[in-house]
Image: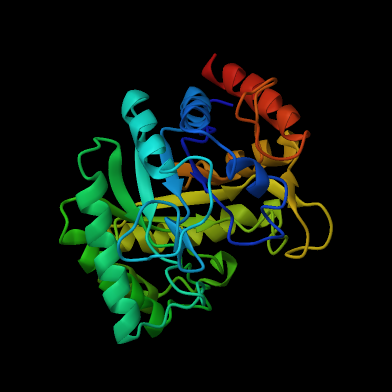
Length: 316
């Protein structure tokens, strides 16, 4: 138990980009007040998740905050949930990464046109100006995630480096990415060179257990390979551990909490190789009993209670 790392960060969203995945919580978060967003931040930090990664500040070209760049907004009970989260994170000493992407209808595409470059740049500048006073605004997340097929694609390298440069113009905040295709990485010199060329600070590779691409017993070899090339490149290695299962068919049904026994095994296998472990995701998959900011299926309470008990044992 002593060697197992606990989860110290999590993704969250104001509206999940997939109607299937977020089926049990999109309706809840749309009705959240600023007070409820503060409760959610308090819950996450209370479990030691001090790194909070907002999936995206906009989905389908519609922002979740009052933007002058993107005109059409989602209808939310809270007029500015981004302000609510950052204010709460200031109070609870969390570090927030803002997801800067999904500013167009084809939100999963890393190809950059002159228009996408313009919008990306203008939104990043707007966010820095509007929310830069918050101490909790710690970094940026690039939500168009790379599906690695042996190596990073040239399209993704251009996308990540272009957006990172835009982000760097606003200050010294960190940049995070979370690639998938983790099991397909070829840990060779070319991959090391690509890591060196990527102008990002942190790489939280998806463990792909929840999406059923990888089995728990394969994790050690996969992340040992990643650690080898990341050590050679001098880049920290993080993990994005999936704490969900699908209610039905993979990618075509809502997300539900995974059993704690499976998650504990994931953490045990990832811990020797990863500097930090984030999860996808607290919001919608964990809730304390009686939470005034409940999001997701009723079964989320059991995972919260199981993880809380496990965490207390770990700390002892």
